[in-house]
Image 1 (spheres, rainbow, N blue to C red):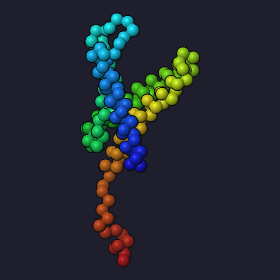
Image 2 (image 1 turned 180 degrees about the vertical axis):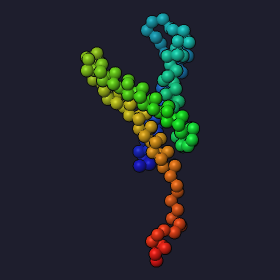
Image 3 (image 1 turned 135 degrees about the vertical axis):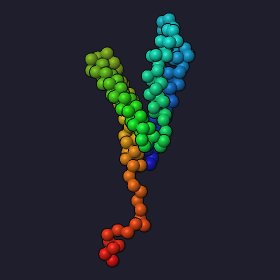
Image 4 (image 1 turned 120 degrees about the vertical axis):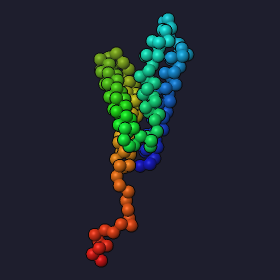
Length: 146
């Protein structure tokens, strides 16, 4: 199970880093445009949602398991998962309509699966952290009968 957790987090870190760096490069004007280069404010506004999603994927989950921090990160993951679900559905719809290549289906599913699996991992870690520790030294009912 630990290997699965580590692989899910590594995928999130790689995707988050890629999205964050590519958004920063777009804002700085390092990504070429086919037409005239838009103003930096419009580049910032168009790149900001992807950059925020990259930051959400890069957040260390161990520091966000309790209280308001957990609620903040859980809401961010819910927004990210719903946005990627809409984008995946639109990509599949475009494939069915004939305007996209079949490769959009696996790409859409992978880009949906990474935030979704991280949201499930956050929920599972929160559930495990909220439980009381196992006290093996405590007396049980069987010890009392003996």
